[in-house]
Structure formats: structure tokens, C-alpha cells
Image 1 (cartoon, helix red, strand yellow):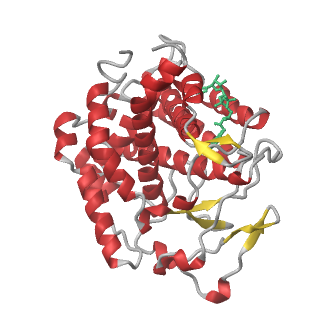
Image 2: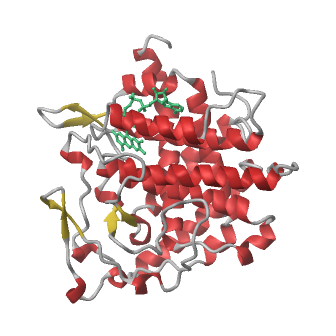
Length: 384
Ligand code: FAD
């Protein structure tokens, strides 16, 4: 029983989080991310790495992203045929991605910059829509110096592991968010792993789950922390998300999307058991508050820019989506003070909302997998 009591720096305990996740959040999120609104993500996949030359270390075909056939696009996302100009990636016809963008699809959403990230959807050059359902986050074979260098750059330059008493609360939070996301990526690799390349057999790799995540209790704690942090952002934006337009041209599906969002953000069980998953009001209080906020914002923007250097396309897709999701959570929690001001003072881009909910779903999947599989993984590792 390593994980009992309150999740560090949060306002709910592990048992409650597991119960709420299993009974309410995970099932709702699984349905929500399948809706047409939430399954298409707009992303710039081929970008120049501002830090190192692109070293494309990807070994497997599974690294490349399958684009959506045009027939699958929700009607309002489609552009006039004359603008349809698919461009092949990596010389593979099967990797052709539609990069043109229909600005009409974004008419009901604002297009202001997110100060927390370097990418944003107002920058339309080389953007494409990707169907996330066709591109699950799983093992891709992206390993070795290229992958390690990215994580190293993120940790050493932008959010060093804090020395317990020295760092302030705000700096610890940035580290914990990145570490929690890193744990979640490792959990997805373990939950959907290529067990046998010759027969293309995929399945769970519980040894990897143990070796990369479970044997380091702080990585598990950071995963729970990140989940609650993002959940707090989603519930804080309750009114905004409930009133938002989820228009894709498919009336029935869009009504379902709205109803699922409403159930998720205002679920009575969650409100009763974990009303404030994370208390952001206690941050940025000291004299250094504003300066600290700017510094952390800059560090997070750097992390966001590093995503352009991830040398595996599918990893880059999910890296960008999840960093945008974290940036959106930071924007919701730290841009405006107080619940009442939120509705009037925050503006979210459609892609930010899509990233935020898909990130929450990924974290929810990871929390569930860790909770369900820990006993078996520890038994296999000989630590039960
Ligand atoms: P890594 O996971 O590369 O970790 C490097 C070092 O970071 C470790 O040695 C350890 O010191 C430290 N560390 C590890 N976990 C944590 C943690 N939770 N908190 C703090 N420190 C930690 N691979 C895929 O197969 N599929 C993907 O979808 C995928 N997406 C990726 C997305 C991004 C943005 C990046 C940078 C990489 C991605 N990768 C993906 C690669 C994957 O994350 C690993 O880098 C790779 O599997 C090699 O793992 P590793 O065991 O060398 O350790």
C-alpha cells in the first residue's frame, strides 16, 4: 500500500481518485474522445527543430501517422476541392497528410495566442488534421540517443528536478507536470507494446511498466498529480466548456458531445468526493510571484518548442497534443483569478479544448492501467 493518503499538493486521496476515475471519469472520457469533435486534432507535424538537426531515429512504420481520408472529415472541416493538395511525407504514399485548413471550421472559436505554448492554431502553414483514433499512442520503436536527448533537454534546461527544500512550490509543479506526463507516455508504451515483431503481436508489457514507472514511486505520484491538475482545469472551466459549440455538422453526434462534456464537468459524485482536485489559488502569492510566473511560462514554452525535435512522427503528434493540453490547463488555472471571472476572461481555441480533453483521457487511462495492473506487474518483478 504505497499510495495512501492525499496525492501530494492536491486535495484528494488516492483511493478517491481511483474510484472516481474507474466509475465516472474513465468511461465518460472514453466516449467523449470518440466523438467527431474530439477525434480530429489540428497539428503541424513537419517542423524544423530549432535546437538540433532532425535525426529521424524512428525504426518502425508505426511511427508514421495515418492521415484521415477526406470522406471521414466532419462536413464543416472540409475545404473546397481546388485547395486539396495532399503532400507525401517521408516519401511514403500511405503517409500522405492533408495539410490544408478550412478557417470556417474555426469560426465559432477564438484564435488568440496561448502564452504558455509555442505552437498555436492561428499559424496555419503546413497544418493538417489527424484522426486520433487511427493513431493510438503506443510503442513506436523510438528509443536510443534521440529520445533520451529530448527528455534530457526538457528536464535539465527547463524543469530541473527540485532539491526538496530549495525550490518553491511553483517550480516543483512544472517538474511534476512533465514527470507525470512522461510517466503517462511510458504507461501507454507498456499497455500497447509490440511483443513480437515477426508476427506483429501487440499486447501488455508489465515488466516495462514496472521498470520505467512502478519502481519509482515519485513517477506514480507525479502521474496522479498531473491527472488532478488537469482535472481541476477542466472542472474550473465548467461553465465555459458547457456553453461551447461542438459543431461538426453531425447534429446527433454533436448533441452527444455536449451532453458528455456536461456530465464530465458537473458530475455530482466528483463534486462531492473531490470538489477542488488542485488548489491553484495558493500559488504566485509571494513578492516574486509575477516574475516567477513569467519564468515558468518561458520554460514551458521552451518545452513546447522542443516537441518539434521529437524524431518520430507519431510521438511528435502525441507530444504536441499533450503539451498543448498541459499549456491549456496552465492557461485556465493561472490566467484568471477566481471562478466567476473565468467565464468572461478566458478564451480557448478549439484545438486547445481538444488537446485538453484528450490529455485528460490519456492521464485517466494511465491512472487506471497503473491501478489495475500494479499487483500483477509487481508480482512479475518479484516485489509483490
Ligand atoms: P526514457 O523514457 O527515455 O527516460 C529518460 C530518462 O528520464 C530516464 O533514464 C530517467 O532518468 C528519466 N525518467 C523516466 N521517466 C521519468 C518520469 N516519469 N519522471 C522523471 N524522470 C523520468 N516512444 C514510444 O514508443 N511511443 C510514443 O508514443 C512515444 N512518445 C514520446 C513522446 C515524446 C515527447 C518523447 C520525448 C518521447 C516519446 N517516446 C515514445 C520515447 C519514450 O518516451 C522513451 O524515450 C523511449 O521509450 C526510451 O525509453 P528509456 O527507457 O530510454 O527512458
